[in-house]
Image 1 (tube, rainbow, N blue to C red):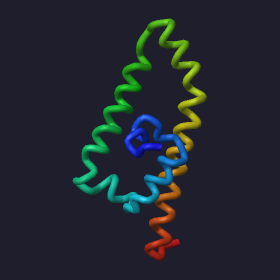
Image 2: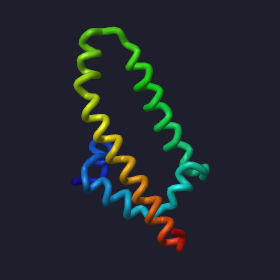
Image 3: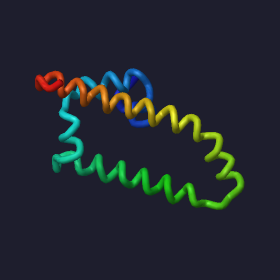
Length: 96
């Protein structure tokens, strides 16, 4: 898969492999100025999701209910990648 498609399909295994190959320290993602755009984008997406969740449309509520199982699995997948990257970073630095 083309690396640019990972932005649309970040949940595929190839995207996880690509992120692992970037070989950056997870702590840098939260602290370094270079990653500010990533933090801002993430914050924006979370706030957008919260705002959208407040919509009163019946159709939107049905969509939200039906997408919840997918979102739960996707969140678990992303969390697993982050934890794996963090553990890998700790192992490289000799921390256990």
